[in-house]
Length: 482
Image (cartoon, rainbow, N blue to C red; front, top):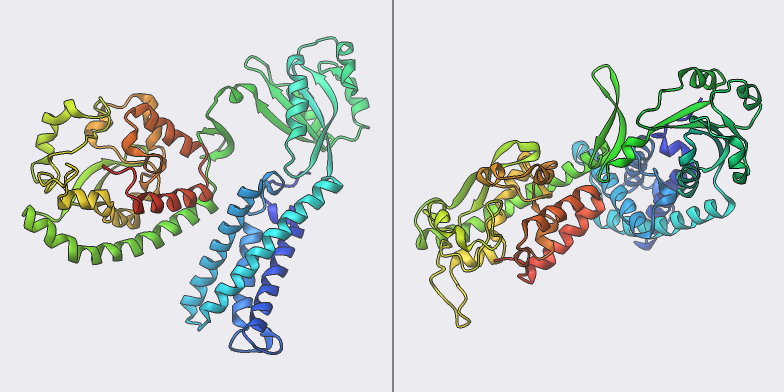
């Protein structure tokens, strides 16, 4: 029998218990810091807080992947993981508190959270070092593959410590090579076609079997059945899957079929839920901010260019879906008609994206400052990115996300090559890698695609947070806008 990989809390129970104890200690310590005597659990006004957050922490710890790959996370990733788990605990606990109408002390919660984060981060790092120092659980694995891959396989399964230290117990060659040629490995090597070797293998210490199949290999069904009859777990990989440089693989269900799924990246249900929750919260407050900005921006736009205050346009969303995007109108009413006349001044020199300096279609652009740069209301709201605020409504609706790739127009989409389509494999965002990497300085659309691909391949909630923080800095410094 083999424990499923998703049961991360059970496989790392000491990490979960440690986090829970630290959380409760943080509430107790904060209770004492605020000059209360005794135990928080005996005070009716405060005890509900640690109880609710214990329940939220227990639920998330048991039914999420918060501790998956804990031993392979570096300091930066551990910081992001802990920050994410705190956000989830606050979200789940906060929803319960709101629905139940429970009165809590927000300052007390914030203080306890700060204490918890500091202590939990230190103890997680210490616990990881303790495990790695004494050694992870040993798992011995038999390798079934062609002779040319053996050294690479042994290196790859032993170098990446996820939940155990794997070591090769023996090798069965699929291509009938001479086993004697591999004596230097220091482990038993056999010809896989000789089923008599199974009588000897049956008495080895073997926890798992790893089978690597090449393109033209026939699945050794009889051999694998014998391993299963012994109660040994088999892990199968196809070498062709390693040939996709930008691909990740997962096992899923498609109807009643078990399939191997390949994608540029996979997002867990937990991460997708948290990202959507963050989008809803951000979209809600962003929409409220848009309403306040409307009171000041609308008159300025209408006085200079009578017409609609909001600009709406059909754009391409995730996987080619069409949606309507909203912005504060920063251009004159005939902007789209004049775009064709200005295409020769496009900084990107293609039909895939339009960008130009001193765009005359912008409201008030005819007004110049002492430096010769346009100083109109349209230029102001574009340079300060205020025109983007109505897109928070798109985020709230679910058409967009806070962080993603920029959505192309229908005309731009029609001119995309197949390699460009990767940009739209996720929800488009208000901000993204291109925006925080100096969008005005990038004039090569292929570089835009590379930045978006890099974001999609390495996506994580921590990366989204990093981009959001950098976006705020870019906007405040008026960098990248034109």
